[in-house]
Image 1: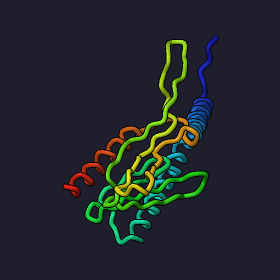
Image 2: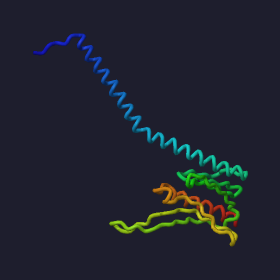
Image 3: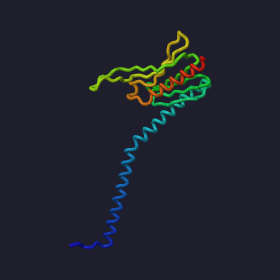
Image 4: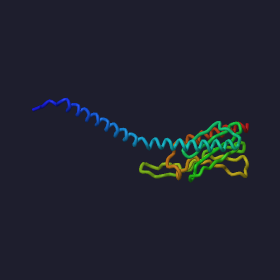
Length: 183
């Protein structure tokens, strides 16, 4: 036999259903916050690291009365260029320490990409794995050795991101500047 529910019983069911919806919404919101927090923290950490690199790059440029006409920030390094003064600035974080360099491009005869790789055997065949990417700046003077700016090192970073495109672009830009001033 089906009995009709009283008005009080109907209101009690409505209240219970509403409380369940609020509880579900709170649990859902907490779940989303927990899942999203690593991404938010990673983005904040990356932004802080980029700001530190940019500040270090700006500081070294200021020490040489230069400005940053071109610049690029990456995961482990920052590079910048004062086109008018022909000065290149490079900052890299290694073993927790920030290493900063400046190079007078008037004293450089050429620039090349230095790629150190090894062959790894897989079931499907051999594959080249890049261990290190450096920008090699060859001095115009014979007695000064080559300057190397490390863009990638497999002992520091496990994976390449945009370092290959970046190093190739910087090599072209620097060679264009060097060749323009030499002619």
